[in-house]
Structure formats: structure tokens, C-alpha cells
Amino acid sequence: MVAIMNTVRRSTFWTTFILVMLKIMLFRHFVFDNVEIVRLFSDAAAILTLMFVLELLTSVNWKMTVFTIFNIVMSLLLFACTVYFTFYGSMPTYTALSGANQLGQVQDSVTATIQTKDYLFFVDFVVLALLYAVTLRSKNRVTKSTRVGKPLYVAIALLLTIGASALYIRANHDISNELVQSERLGVLNYQVATAINARIENEAIADGSVNETQAALEQLESDYLTGVGAKVEAGSNSFFGVAKGMNVVVIQMESFQDILVGMDIDGQKVTPVLDDLIKNSFYFSNVFQQIGPGNTSDAEFLSNTGIYPTGDIAMSKGYGDRAIPSMPRLLAKYNYVSNTFHVNDVTFWNRNDLYPALGFTKYYDKPSFTDDKFNAFGASDEELYRVGMEKLSSLHDKNTPFYAQFITASSHHPFVIPEEFREIKLPAELEGKQLGHYIEAAKYTDKAIGDFIQALKDKGMYDNTVLVIYGDHFGMQTKDNDPAWVEQTLGMKYEERLSRFNIPLIIHVPGIEGQTSTKVGGQVDIMPTLANLLGLNLKDEGYTVFGRDLLNTSNNVIGMRYYMPTGSFFNDDIMFVPGTGFDDGTAYDINTLEPVADFSQYRDDYDYIMSLMKLSDEYVKLSPKR
Image 1 (cartoon, rainbow, N blue to C red):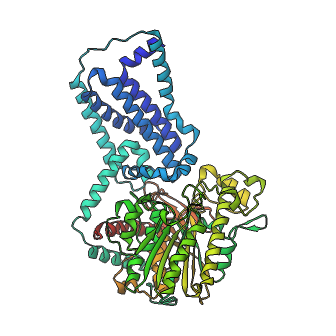
Image 2 (cartoon, rainbow, N blue to C red):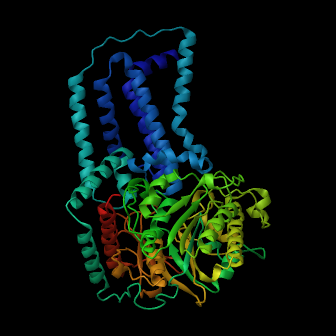
Image 3 (cartoon, rainbow, N blue to C red):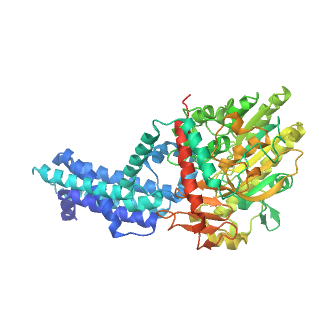
């Protein structure tokens, strides 16, 4: 073993390279389910580039320490990217990884996501530590090398690896599908390509203006709708102004998928409150999440603005310094007070920047609530609504119209709630399973909403309040809930993406007979739909949105990225996921959840969504700073 350790010391560079490349192969196996040798050349070029730089900058006596640190850093990066992919289904960029400081707030979720196999990235350190311990015990000291390096050869090799990386990036930088691009380039070159593309995009809009983007959007809509079907603008037809002057309460349910609505477990309803509310509400059963790396905070951004997240950074972090056109800002013109309630600290996902950016009058965060230690976030949904009712009652008593947003947290991953709050008896096959915990948490979420609705009625506020209730994003992770097992256990069709990303949207307007719609929609459509009900014509108000009023749209198509690659979309017929582009993509029937072989007739939808999201990105990037 001493001889082995001495060999490792003498060949630190190549030992480190081999170890890192083995971990790259492990990473590709975990994330992409394959290890294509040809793809490893891009990884090798990037790794060698960094290592040659270190070789040139490091003295002989420090090489083992420096390359050991490099190995550690790469191991941590690959570990983090693997865990990130497991949770998000996306390859993280340097901008997404910059939000790692938020992980402490969701420690339980992070811990639940890590799998035992992920620790294989660190096995070599255990082996090397044992070898090092043996050499110490043998007292066999290795004399420090005084050999002179060969900087010229290393510099030439460095230029060659930089050139190779540049060629790989140039050949693949224009692929919009992030997963395909990252698989071809590898984790390091993918970061470089992302930075280059971001610079190109920012330079392209540097001389642009919001007005130019608005004009381009109008032209895009006009071109797309030619021969496709007329879109009725918000405020020009059905249900316009039926809720004019009413208060608005928006409830964003944590991790709430649409499959929970109407679910029955051994004769026990999981969502009896929502089921009853739907009977007299507008219920959209084919609405899908559209969030980016900001998750819940991105859902807040979407529902309040009708603007797509950029997908590369949480909107609260990247654009919290802007004055974003939003529902709170619009309603402020009509003397509404806008409050938002969340039991976590307001700095979580930079909400202390997000809420001013969205124009909220006031926010209530962790110090406003009594911590009943419901879960890692602290206070329960019941406590959330208790405080909310106090504040809203005060406004009601002053005859002040309000727009109130509640961000629930009691059904947050990993969904384990205190035993005294569990109100459903699970069958044996669900006991101790994530799906079982998820159902228990959803049942509690539903009950708390019911108590809140009753409080609104008791206070005489219910008959003058519009209720908007929707899910922020999926709950069940595929790694813990095999789709085939879910189908068998629940007795329903369950597709890994269509079912998982499907969230409920319920809008209750007092005195208006609702209806159930299977029209496809997204979180980007919530703001224009609500504006129509409140009698606010967004075009007349000078507001630009990238969603549609679901009550007055003859057809719809929405884009999604981050949890699926850019270019993915949902329309009233299919869910489409691109390959390198449209032609090699895949599609699923939105009703049967079965694969669709021929989707060629939907190319216009693909081109439209690609252009629409690009314009949305331009719009938010050009929005004025506060």
C-alpha cells in the first residue's frame, strides 16, 4: 500500500484526472441513464483545461494539495447536480446553483431527495485516506520532488483543450433543449454555453424597449391566430365584470396536484371542501405548472403578472429590483390594499425583494405568526389563515377593498405532518409511503381551507369575495412514486409528466354559476382570467400579459420549461417535449395520456411558444427598475 500511495503522490495530475472522469461517468449514468464514450471527450476537454491551468499556477510542493481540493470541488459539484436533477428534472446552471443558500430553509426536502448511491462520488476519498494512514504508520516519508515542470508543453496542451471545448460548445450552443445540450457538452462546458447564450440574448435586447416588445407580441399573436381560431381578449366577452369591486383572496396551495381533487381513499374524500366548492365555481382541470428554479416564489410571480419566468434564475432573485406590472399594482389604482401571507421568513427565495417588485402593500411573514411547529416552516395553515382573517377583517370593517394572497406550506415535501392532524385512515399499501404522507397532508390543506371559508362567512365577507385557488407545482417525485405503482394503487391513469405537472385552478365568484372546463391552461393565464372577472380590460389599462383569459379563449397553448426542456408545450390536444428540435420530439395525448406518433400538425404551436417565451423574457428584462 505504501508503494501505491507513493505512486499516487508522484502522478497526482493523472490520478486526479482519472478519478474525476470516473465520477463524470457515474454522473452521466445517474442523470442521463447512459455513458456514451463520444460525449466523454467534451467532459475530458473541460476537465483538462482546468487542470492544466492549475498545473501552470501551482508549485511542485503544492500540487497534491491543490489537485485534491480540485477533486473535492468536482465531487461536490457532481453530487449537487445529481441531487438537483433528481428533484427538478433539470440540469442546474451556475445561476440556479447560486441559490444554494436557500437550501437550509428546506433541509427536510433536500435530505429526502438524496439517495444512498449519490455518496459514491466520495468513495475515493475514503480509499485515499486509508492509504495515507498506512503511509503514516509505516513512517515511510516521501521526499519532496524538486523536478522542474514543463510549462511550455502544459501551455500547448492547455490551448488544445480550450480549442476542443470551444468547438464542442460552438457545435451545440444553439440547441434549445437544455437536457440534450447538457448531455452533449457535459456539466462544465454546459455552464460556459449557458453564459455565452445569456450574453448574446442580453446584447440582442440591450437597445430594445418595452414598447417594441409589446408591438412584437401583438404581431406574433396576430400571425399565430391566422387560420387557427380567434382569441377573445380579456374584458370583451363572457363574464366581464361579474366580480367588479369585489375583494379577492388568492390561495396558492403547496405541492398540490390535480389528481388529489375528488380523490377517494376507501370511501374517504381527500378534498371534500374543494369538491364542494367546485360545484359552484369555475374549475379548470387541465391547468399545468410553469415555474422555474424559484418554484413556489415563481408561481407567485406567474399568478400575479401573467409573465413567464425566465427559467435560468428565480424571478425573485433575478428581477426583484424591478417594478413589475402586476395585479396588486393594477388594483392599487382602484384603492385596493394588497397583502400577502407566508409563514416562512420573507428572505426565503428573496421575497423581501419580490413583494415590493409586485407592488404588494404589505407582507406578513414568520414573526407575524405563532409557531405551532407544524413542520420545518413553522406555523400551520390554520395559523396562516387565523392571522390573515384578523388583518382582512380590519380592512373589511373599514370598507377597504383588498387583494389577499395566502401561500400555504403545510403540504410541503416531504409531506409528513404531525399525527394529531392526520384525518384519514390509509390502507396498508400507503402506510409509510410518500404517496400516503402526501394524501394526509392534502387532506389537512383542504380542511384548513374549509375553516377559512367558514370564517369568511361568519364575518360576512364571503359573499363579496372572489376566491382563486390553485396549486403551485407538483408534489410527488417520480423516484419515490413509480407511475405504474401509483396507477395500480389509486386505480387511475398516471403519466409521469402530464399527471405530475397538472395542478387545479378553482375560481369562485359569489352569485355566479360556475362551470368545469377541460381547456388547457397555465399559471400564466390566472392574472388575465381574474382581470376579466373584475371588469379590468388589460389592453385599456396598458398591461401586457403572455397568458390568456381562460373564460374567453377558443383555443390555448402554453409553454413550459425548466422541469421540461425549453420548447415543451401543452395545447388542448397534446403535451409536446422537444428533442434537439421539433421533428425528433415526443408527444402525449392530454386526455388518454398515451403517446402520439404523428404530431406534425402542431409545429405552429411549437414555433409560437418559442417566440412567445422569448418575448416574455425580453419584456421582464426591459422592465424598469424601482
